[in-house]
Length: 120
Image (cartoon, rainbow, N blue to C red; front, side, top):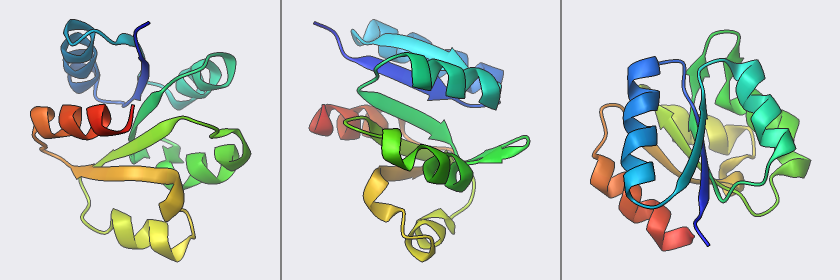
């Protein structure tokens, strides 16, 4: 049985690159560029991994984690961000335990894949 990944990122090119990469690696992948679409997918389906862009229009990773804290269950969350301050923000909000890792843009796709393989 293949593992399922949801990618939420408003950068269409990055979203498609990640989706192609992980599909080729044997994952079932859904992706969304709009926060509402991503939240809808997240609440309707079961995922093993969520790749979440930290900053999207009208939405950020902190908001998502706070809203979905009770629903996180077994999903492993990795944040993708252009900001090096994200780990401290997570710590300040008491949300660090919900996140497996933070990858700063630009990131090494193989390192991200390795981190995901380590937890699923």
